[in-house]
Image (cartoon, rainbow, N blue to C red):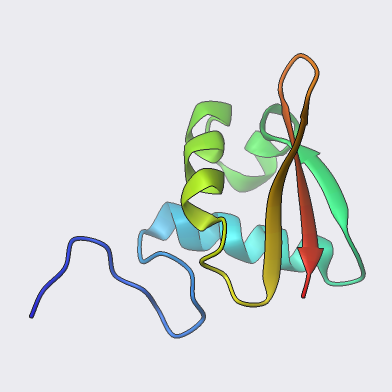
Length: 84
């Protein structure tokens, strides 16, 4: 059986971009919750803000050890990332 969206054992979506973003978020949030805007982390992750925004929506609820929540919008979406 084959599916279009694969999941790795760590719960992140199978695309390299999604894995890269998930790894970045885990590292940044390992000592507690953080708040991020895509435009401010895009250079660190090597993705455009638009790509990050789309991936954040995909990653919500799919990473068992991280809580990803759309927090607010002031000029750009702010995401709350917290370890679970």
